Length: 273
Image 1 (cartoon, rainbow, N blue to C red):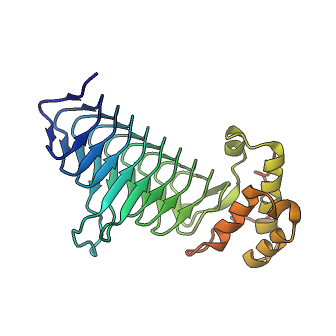
Image 2 (image 1 turned 135 degrees about the vertical axis):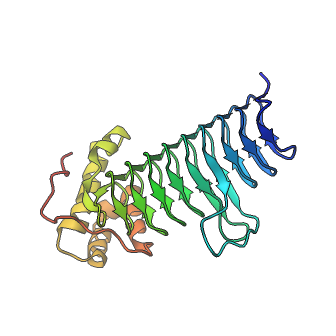
């Protein structure tokens, strides 16, 4: 099967278009763009220079990928947007390239970005992430593997969203949300429990879930501050020798914006295993 490029599309001769690519009418693909094999691009899409899109992606009507960052410091130097394989990018999604010269916005594989979601400059998005309609990621946000951000979640620049996190609709995130947590809040997103359903669906064993629950209780329900809670976890051989808990501790220790607090300390309704 050869490429199927609408005669009404504008595709730069300097763009590298893979095999079995479909490009719809009125789509514009600028120079210095690479499109991987099997990717389907709908009508009225704009893919700007220095964008690299992987294989078997679906890009729907009105998406704009690799445009200039919304940053007064941007000097129109060369910067990049790198997108992996099998991503679904729905209508009117916007993804901006990096701000600094040769910097990158990086997106992994197997993600779904729903209608009108926005990924700002220099963001890093992992694999199997879902952004529901109108989610907005500020610049330099990191969203790690298998996170799920519900509709109209707004994430402040430089925040990190951990693995297997689920954030409720209409939440405003201004601090880091650690791995495995549920969070929500329209004023400030706070921790509401563990994402037990997500962990089960992802194949975490009962033993693994118990260790995560034990660490969670120490962090958020022991009355200790974060530093003392982490010290207590490190003193527990069963916890700290487990790679899952090591990742959680590492997330806390590398926070720059600070870690989200718990909504209500006595509320432990999401601790069922």
